[in-house]
Image (cartoon, rainbow over all chains, first blue to last red; front, side, top):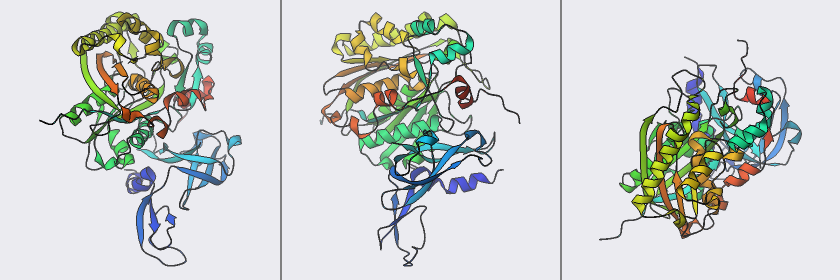
Length: 131
Length: 353
């Protein structure tokens, strides 16, 4: 059995639903959820969910893709700031590379991230698309 | 005795991928005349799923739109039924992933439906029944497909991708279900055997003895059962394997082109199989006004039709703008593909290894 299934299953809450942790002390949102808040050592968090809309902070273009992503050609991978301050890393889908712009508004969509080979599971999660 | 609460649609949503391919681009590859195809099928272009999209991802997006429009807690959804003939797995449900992404698990019932192009309206039918029976508070019926059509076959011009989701309940209903009817016979007009990559069909046999007999059989019985006539409806929507069939069947029943136009999306969308008449219904709900009646008849090869009569309520005001509407998804932000990229997206290219 592939090693991927158990790990994929454990990450479902954040990959499917954007489940995050909000500091009860500072109100800052952490994604993925943290157990300890940096700088102040706070351990009190309440569960929250990421919004669907955010802003592209920066990006890079992957031209030589890793295994499992080779067929996607050149694609953009971005860091997106979500309301509440959490920053997520996600592929930028449905957008030609030359149209990717820092500062553009993006929206989370549910997409297939990769397949575990030809007979393994489909692994789903979030990507962002331009708004 | 207190009057029974009317069951109906409390939220709806659609999802259409952004990629398109034109009839001209496909016809060029197979040496066909695009004008003949466009005229014959009344079809101009079709949607194409991106390589990272399938029935699960499109269903999740359509369902999120439906939940947003209903403004309900997804934990209250008691059933998710996804109808499709392109479920991503042969064995492993689509519905559990959709329910998980919505945050509706584990207190929920899911099942995947299959009935050629009718599987979407089947989920709607069952959700309506379960809510009416009082077994669940909300039920989500979804029709979605990344339709298959063999290269060079007539179906290649129409087989497209999209999803529509309908949340049924009995509180804050935006369109009540006033009547239903179902019509089924064994009619071998279109099928796909186990392990076959593309479906087969009976050519002209798919017309008169299959689509027309079934859709007319369902529609006429539903009209008779309800005591209504075509002129009582503001909108009608039928299964749309191409642009021509639904227009012809509407005319045969006595509906006008105007009544059929809002939900007639196939010329620019293609045939989304299980999503076909359901996506047409979302386009109608986007613009429908309180008091208007909607007549819907789906069709699935094999063969059968599910018929619904809806009446739009006051609660529909302001609902359309909450999530992406169908017509703008169809008309805006499109990327046109060449045949090579389309073939790659649809896994039609044999690679080494």
